[in-house]
Image 1 (spheres, rainbow, N blue to C red):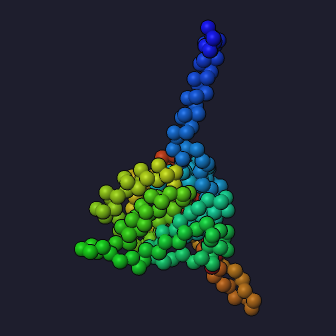
Image 2: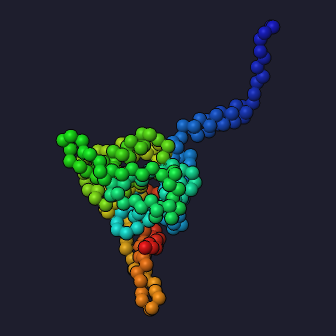
Image 3: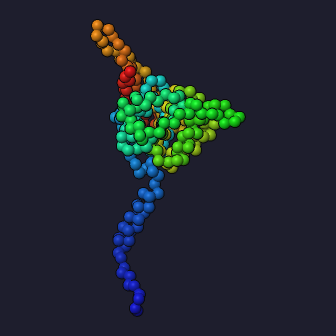
Length: 244
């Protein structure tokens, strides 16, 4: 019959192979961005290995304790920005030193610095560093395009009712955007909403001999330990030297 197309039968194996290919492409297209991209390196081999390659995409993590949080954050930012990733630093303490950041390798052109220390509280609410910081993070996740967001503050209060209700939303938004959120604080504030908790512990001071036989304090050794992790067994520790 003119104008009609002839269909050639295919073997069942060909049909199954085609279905598998189509299903694989569809699954890849629908997979969260966090599952399609490699983890973000911390430049610390032991920590990266413990986290199965680095900071996982689309997850909330936190690093707590004393000295070492800023150094760890800058290492992660340097690795990410050097790979061409766009990052953000939400600063509740006005603590970021851009000259130090540049010196350790952070590409400043790919870093958005958000300072919330001077944020004006909403009518009827008291100022809360953690709430202001989380609000800024929420806006960044809504804008999209950030591989790594650091939320940094030493005055974050644990157990805030507002923060507790906001964490589930941030966890979902991180997963959807494929953005890694690293919270740096004195004590755990994300709790069970964090996939990983790292802890800094101060170590021995580093002294160097100066002219005239004097000894000059030139830094401090600190350790970073994986104290809690959903990615693998905790307990891995790495030393991080801090220089003045």
